[in-house]
Length: 164
Image 1: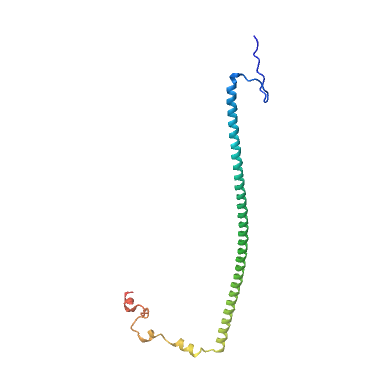
Image 2: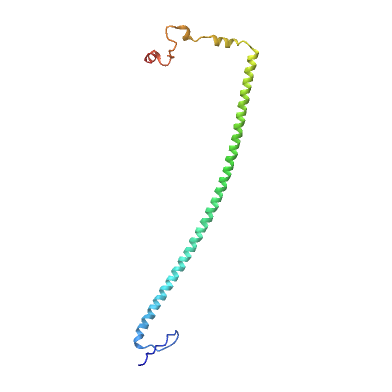
């Protein structure tokens, strides 16, 4: 028995004779290869267009990102300035508060000193003070028929007192 011989490998560009029964298949393969080539060219064109669109979008996003970073830097700077102003105002307010407390203490000391001087100069009370101090309230002197624990009846009348 003889062994079958293998067909020589296909080499592109070789002009080997194609048997007639393979000719229609070869024509169909050439048509399919041409269609595949057209489809690949269309896809390559679409990809190129998509890449161009994406590069425009990436550029736009980069521009927006830069703008956001600039705005963020401006806002942080403005915030820092405002924070410094607030700290300065808080310091000024604390100084003013301390000055006010010091002035209040000085005023209290001055009033105490004046009162001590007046009490040393006039050992007896002034006539106005004596009159005010010795005057009795009208309710205490006019009527002893009512108990001393009676509330003022000017706003409520006698009925409110009796109800209580």
